[in-house]
Each structure stands twice: as C-alpha cells, then as structure tokens.
Image 1 (tube, helix red, strand yellow):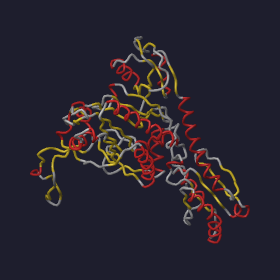
Image 2: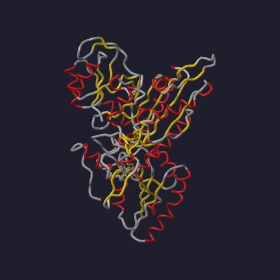
Image 3: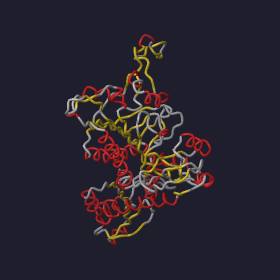
Image 4: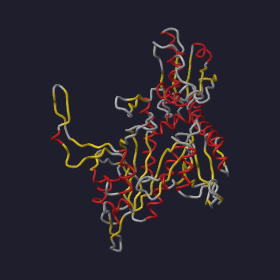
Length: 488
C-alpha cells in the first residue's frame, strides 16, 4: 500500500483527515456538515458506549429516550438556554411535501401551528416530562441517561470534532437538595475522567469553566480538557450543575417530608463522538490510526505468510489453539486469510486502521515453533515461541494500554508551561500547549486575552497550584492560576 497519509509536521489538519479516511472511520455526507460513520468508526463508538454505559449503570443511572423534536416554546422558557442555542437550531416549519411538475415542493398548507426544533440538547423536553414524574421527595432522585443524536447548525465542520449532527449521551438528573446535585455533577465528571484516562489512555485536566464558557442555563460547568499532539486543547466532556433554573422554568416541584413544596435541583452531563477525534489526535502517527487496546474493535490480527493453499491450511491449523485461547481470554482476534491481498498490503492496512497487535506466521516460524508479534503503538517487532503466546499477548495488550497513557501524559507534561507575565504568555502560546497563568477573574481581561492571542481559558483547575498571585495582564489579585490554550 502506497503511503497516503500526510506527515503531521507538514500539515496537521490534512494528516487528521487522511487518518480518518485511511482507517475507514467516516466519510463526508451529501448533507453539508454531516458525516457517514463507517463500520470501523462506529465499532469504536460502540466500544466507548459499552464502557460508559456500564459506568453509568454502576453509578445508579438508567437509560431512557425522549423525542427528537422540541416545541419552539419550550426553548423560550429558560432565557439563558435559548440565547445560548438560538443560532444553532434547525427549525421545522412544515409537515409535508407535494408533487409539482415531476418534482417536490413544500406544501404551503402544511405549515405547523408551532415550529419544532430539531434537538440541540434535551433539557427542555426532558424537564417537561419530569414535571409529570415528580410529586414527592419519594420520586427523587431521578437519574436518567439518553443515547441519542443531536443537531447544531455549525458553519465550520470537521469529521468527528465538529459536525452538524453527532451522536452522544446526555445525562439528566433531578435531586431534592443542592448538595446532592453538586455531588452528582462532580461524580459524573470523575466518571468522564476515569473513562478518558483508563480507556482512551488520554490524560485530562478537570476543572470548572469561566462564566463566559459556561453551558447555557447552567450555574456551573465542569469539564475535562486534553491536549492534542499539535498543542491545541480539546474539551472532551462536560458536567453541568443546573441549580433550579430548569425546575423553575418548567415548574417542577416536589413535596418534602415536612409537607413543603420545593423546586428540585438539576444536573446534565454528556460526551459525544468528538471523543473519537480526541482519540485520533492523542495517539495516532504518520502511519495511521493508533487505538488503545481497551477500545480497539480488533485487538489482535493474525496474518498468515503463505505461498499456496497447503501452507495456508497448515498455518491456520498451527495458529488455531492460540486464536481459540485468546478469544477465551476475552481478546478480540481477527484472522486475515484473504487470498487476494499480499501480506505487506495487509500489514499496511491493519497498521493504518490501528490494530494494537499484529501476529505474522510463515512456514519458517511454524518449523521453529515461533511467531512474530508487532506492536502498533511503537512499531516494534519480536519473535516469540508459540507456546505461552496467548498469555504473553494478553499481557502485552495491558502493557500497550499503560504505555500509551504514559506516552500521552509525558507529551502533555512537556507541553505544559507556567508563566507570570503577559509577554511570556504571548511567546508561549505561539508554541502551543497548556499554559498556566494568573487571571484577575474579569470577563474584560478574559476577552482581551482571547482577542489578542486566540487563547481561551480552558478551565479553572480543580487540582493543582492554588497559590494566589497577580493577573499577568492587569496586575490585579488572582485567586489561582488558570489553564489557557488554543483549542478545537
């Protein structure tokens, strides 16, 4: 297979698109800004979904489904919410088409009495239901998650990272007390951190957003932020403490055990197929996709090196106990015995698609009782005995998972700097990476920095240095350093 992937150093944006294409993850769709998620890409999303869904269930959540269409009046009930999403909404105004001269046109008589909004997020439609579900403190908490698609009318799109339609999960919970809701918000933030680091092998910083970066309608927005290989940040997940804003907007009250009627407290939280973009940009290289074993649709691929059908049968028989043993250990294994492709072509294809471990077996390996094992993350190869190879490969997958996280963590650490002055900041931001600096807490200073440097405050970190200081721009007091970066 000829090299079809642009080097990262030459053109990072094109490299990203090349990796998506060569790994057969997604295609552009006929609808501008939307994408077709191909089986390889969807399999990664399904693995993400499976892992996250278990984590949600283990923390007491249940899945439900709510309508794709939302009455326009619902969005106007929470002023901050509608203001935040107004320019991103797709609006349905008519209910049918009619045939005209061999084509179709919108039937003008089918105009809806009230326009419908294609779901940009589900707070409003869900809280309308919660009003009917909640009467007493005995009905609380409600811990609901939804796997769904949403539409946000983006003008500039990129596969997985930003598309008009994307897949996601959105959790929506209702609680009797403020403390319970805040605890839920932070609990789900920790779920996201754990998933990002332990499954995606992607190190993240947890923190709270500034007011200008807060989710529309939230009291506080918490996030996980990760650094990509090009030095830009990616917001990989958010968890919102909504206070009583939506409860008041939709008049959702409960009677407590003293008989008093009170508004409930709310949270919402979500991650999306954007995580696949984050996975690509965290780990992949100039040869293609690199996937952490825990999320790889195929963890091990076996490629027989053969010249004729007799050799093929012998090698497959030789490898059968190993393949069976790996499957019993829960390892996803694929045997690539296609006749119409040469081994070198297969190697390049599986490399581009990010399969973590490749096994190659030829007649000489079989004679010597060996096999060749190649790691996708480091491209290192070694010859090992077939006896005991199952346990070795299973252990190797765990090692690869850990090594990928440590490599990403090291790269993030090396691209993280602390600065004290605005001049230092301006110089550092041109090099990319995470930058910690003091900020005086005002929207004016935040806007000035963004306008002059294109850097935003990614979050006010929950952990790390809490030492007070002086704002790098104004010299005014600053409670702690905050995290800056240019971002996707």
